Length: 123
Image (cartoon, rainbow, N blue to C red; front, side, top):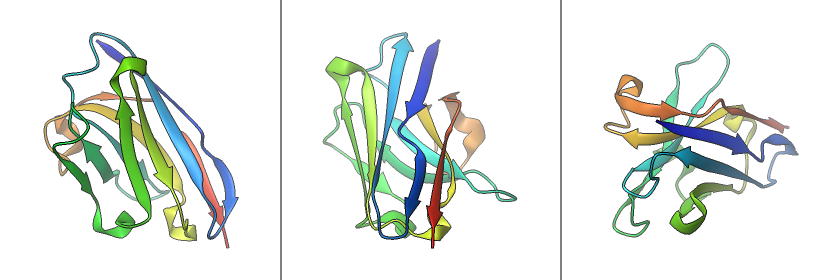
C-alpha cells in the first residue's frame, strides 16, 4: 500500500501561483508513475499531469495546463510537486495526488489516491 498526503492548496487570485506537494509513504515510492488529477464541482475527475519514476524520461500534461503548470518529483523525499502559475478561475477544483497510474484517461486504472486538496482561484 502507498499512502499519499497532499498539501499546499488554498485561495489565490487569478494570475497567482500555488505549489502543491504530495508526500508518499508505505511501499517504495520510486518505481511508480506519479501524477495529479483534479475534480471541479459537478464534473468528473480529470487528468492534469504525470511524471514517470525517474522524473526525466517523460512528463505529460493536459492541454489546459501546458505552459502554466510544472510537475516534478524528489524520490529521495518521496514527494511529488505541482507548481501552478497563471492560475485561472476555471482551475478551481480539488486536486488529487495519484500513484501507479496505469492510464491517465481512466481513473479506475489509478491504484492510489490522496485525499485531495482544495484550490480556489478568485476572479
